[in-house]
Length: 456
Image 1 (tube, rainbow, N blue to C red):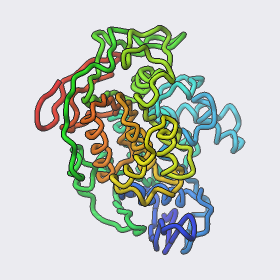
Image 2: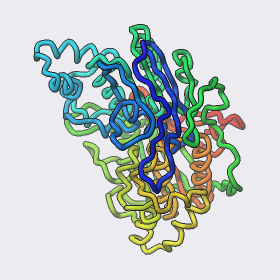
Image 3: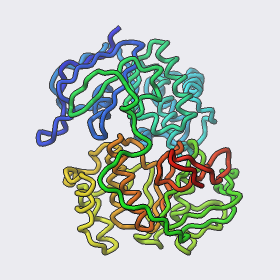
Image 4: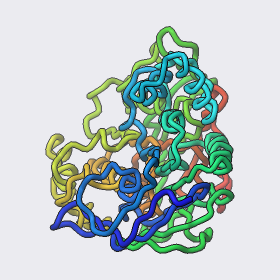
């Protein structure tokens, strides 16, 4: 049965702005799984919002919907959808709005949480969940309404490998039950076993094709401009002795039995599953988060404290939108330069160097998730910090933007910057010198294979 159809649909956000979608045709039926891929900023999220009916701007063409169609949408940043303080209340929110009797809510809420692999108390505070757990929570909040069509924006980037495996089981069962799925995904290979229709969105055109592995983001970035020479300078900039990490009135989140160091000029990855404590560790190093006890940690020779490092330390949060507040990309990149009395010409030079000057006068809040990540990172790179902490900076990147990120990181490392970046998965890249693993409550250093050599 046909659920939704787009016939010659064209759309943009303003008469002076480029067309986002151009004469798009797409039909979705029950039990079908569609996957849409395309370059960063090509309009994939806008297409999902149009399918969900949450875009109310005028469009050309015709959109037909099954009269009783119920649609669920999980955005790329799930935290923009969170409304309640506890897990149970979040999932029950839609049922409350539909007037479902209270005695019927509990089994529906529990079933929705089990279907996404979240075995949590209903009174668990949403604020304590990792971003990946919040993504699964938002899926549960959609499933509780039993939608005909479920739309997911970049699930692979938000979930660890275990979470993706659990999600695959969920999605496979939903398809068997007749639910239709549309995934927006750079890494379509992770969901290849359930995808029936593969689409490529580029330059506003949606074309159907066959997925090949060459479409996936590459682990080793393609050559992009002349990369600066990597120079390992060796001075210790961040050091920690053995410690246990936890919050007040909570059990220990993880232990670091041997401590760790970050040295000037090296790029170190911090790898762990959703909820393991990666973000908490990065914020603690930056001095913006306090644990239940004072950690034996020194950054640039001092104990971490908010505001004492100036331009010498940069932190890129997992939600780049939280660090973007100016009215244009250029103004955004100049803000910290002015604050620390650094040459503001660096901003325009950086945009030009990254081939992003076309974004200079656009609002950073209208960029795609991946574009926001790169602009926020570039803003920090302009400061030329001594220590750079990055929370999952590769999320939402196609292979072209992936190359730009690594260009920036290798350039900073050659200047002596110590870089620590978190990820759900091991990153195979020749610029990575060491890997810290945060699994099963332990933070330890692991040997990594880059494809060129073993380092550790």
